[in-house]
Length: 142
Image 1 (cartoon, rainbow, N blue to C red):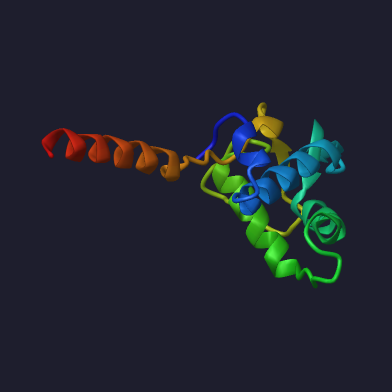
Image 2: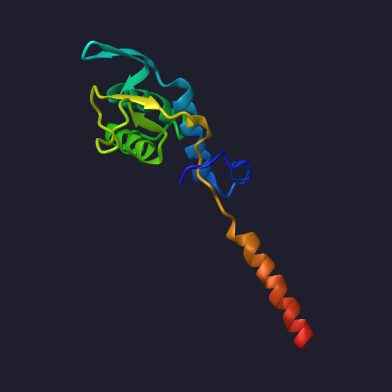
């Protein structure tokens, strides 16, 4: 689910996974090494290969998550597949059926890459409101 950044969720300590996801997406969008690549006598600017994206995440994820945690290449590939599914990155020709591969295949960032985040809805606030209403109704009935 893609949407604009949910600031409330980032400040709330309850949503650690959302904060981590947002920081990883932002870091990836800002710092992934992009350059001009050639395919079939055509040039494509601001692209990166799947292999370079995986290498970049292998280098960056320990800083963002936990320095003692061992990050495996397979986990980076899974995360980049999730980025592809969520629309953070796209195939350079717009092919959705291909998916993400750890190869020399080219990818680009989506137009609103840094604004991609997970929406977090707080059910607690809604439940508290319902409890107040039901408590008020019980008082009226009594």
